[in-house]
Length: 202
Length: 89
Ligand SMILES: [Zn+2]
Image 1 (cartoon, rainbow over the protein chains, first blue to last red):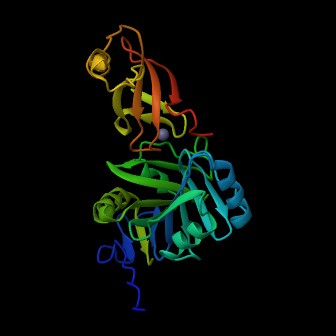
Image 2 (cartoon, chains in turn blue, orange):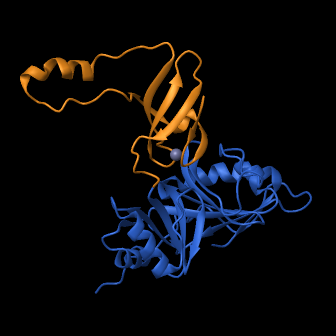
């Protein structure tokens, strides 16, 4: 069998690790691409919701969320993106391996589609992360209304995003369509500049 | 105008697409004597000053079809449900 295609970041050539923007006070924002992730969409087959939930519980020890929150299963995150729909993200099952893994375990219960070549995932963290996102995301991320396991599907500057909170630093992870990586990056760099930001290697 | 999606929560109008009257029923018959029913279904709409049940699609969010009850005089939204009752269950 021939060697599989090597994965190339949607941000290749656009991001260079280093410090950028304002250099006063503490660093506002840290940005890092998450590369090599397995990404897949999971959609429940009609009438199979309960069986699917049972299979996910058994295979990954996770309760598939019925609202827009993120749930951690064994080696896979499941993000609620719509009724009967989830975005699955994994480090262990890298690239298209995740879709293969899920399709095998959830056969007949859910439609699984590989998205690992179609999304770019960016982690935005630090004390000013919310201020940066507030410039484009029409959703309030304040902890009083957005839970620490919260997720949302919406738009930033008219670009579709799927976002979930990764920790209380706070850190957020955003999946954007790969072909919009450049446009999104320009929006992010411009929006983070006033707070000072560091780009970490992916 | 903001719509409170039963899945996503309150979202701005730009995230949704309007489809129209949620109360019209597609005729079952394709026979020629059903022409009048088809004309009603495709072309004729009431234009109420008051409550209107209508379909909206949450295209920039959860991709669900919603049935929204809106007051056409004030744009006040009095109810939002999944158009497909099986969704979210
Ligand atoms: Zn929605």
